[in-house]
Length: 277
Image 1 (cartoon, one colour):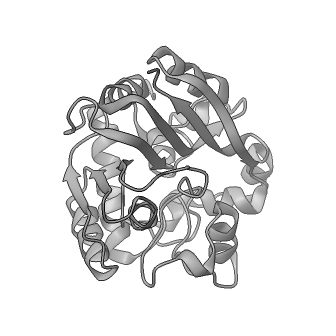
Image 2 (image 1 turned 180 degrees about the horizontal axis):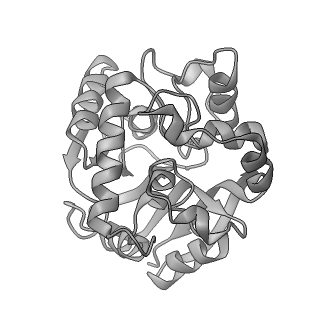
């Protein structure tokens, strides 16, 4: 976490940033639209692991990877999506667990919750709900869920150890966690200190080994990276929210020298873990 920003300040900045982003249907940690269009936005969605066939019309994605594809969910299970955003992954998960299952979204931004509820209704999802709250103190009962998924959100938290502790608490014994997230590979500390980088998904990220250690320290076992993509300059530019309409473009733009410097030092990973029986 930045030494110059408190946890509260970082959360407020993230909340404000995403509230504005969903109004514009623009990107913050990913593409401007989930549709596979020409150009960097479509390329980024393709890289994130979504296909044209599975994408609901008009649902914006703010993620860095598709966690649902790798999750072996069964009918009747309960899935919790941390930072559910506009609801794309909730919709995909609901189709996996069926009518006898349940999907729960968690988000701290009113605008996101409103959009997610609307998208769930339009997609015909009747077994889903969205709860307002923070990952560090989830409004979820002990052992309520079978699965936890998340898409490029935990890295935004300045208190990741609390997020993993809460995730462990709300999972049933034997429950699984599969999250897509951004990690760094020897990223210089000076980049992390910029509050704009937190909402751009890079500055708040920790080193891959530290990320896995946080999950293990919370009690998870079988913690492993099941998929990984290291960003080249073009991918990094899309990830860092360059020229995608979230606020003043001058605040988020990355010049070529910066992109070249950080290319290969930021990666999107899918991390799998299990709560012991």
